[in-house]
Length: 243
Image 1: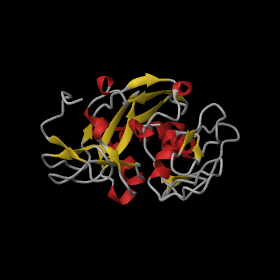
Image 2: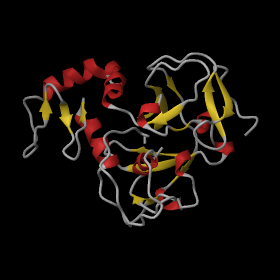
Image 3: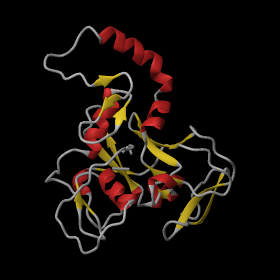
Image 4: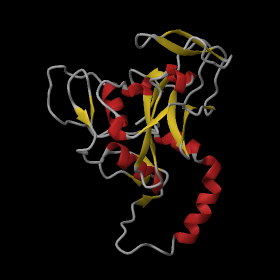
């Protein structure tokens, strides 16, 4: 790990948010810059157990929202410098968000980050989702024009000119149905009997890694041992996704 390559615009120092090393800026990072891809061993969900650290993992999803595999950066030999980016204690403290492109996970700067600031990962909000889609906006607009006259039988139209595509489970809204589908799959899907992610502090279980990560950003009661209590989350990643 000591020999791991780190770009010269970043540096490794003791983290301010958790034990161990964190990643800091050596030069200013501009909002919208993207880093990666995140590197790790490919694992299937059934290979994971509670002894593994979910903070070093991202889920990689297919076009229908299904989990293809999990990228596990626990082993330094199979990871890269992005493993030193830690979860932000709160959404307000995040300066990076995870996004998925193809089957790769990247970290997107959601704010300008000045020199000597620790990089902290959080959940992608609707504003940054809009920025991320700017490059594809023209193509998407043409596709939507061509498909406006054809609606699948029984499909409920939830597009609103002001709010975009609204989540029926929470107050979030998104710029496209694809992003809404990812949001619903990641944060509002029902628990799976095949794999659950468990909080080591309070014992709560979650069906996907992203839901557990969202839970870890909030205070939890170690005495609360309910078998499954996942709150409705407002927004997400990718990462991805990191489950």
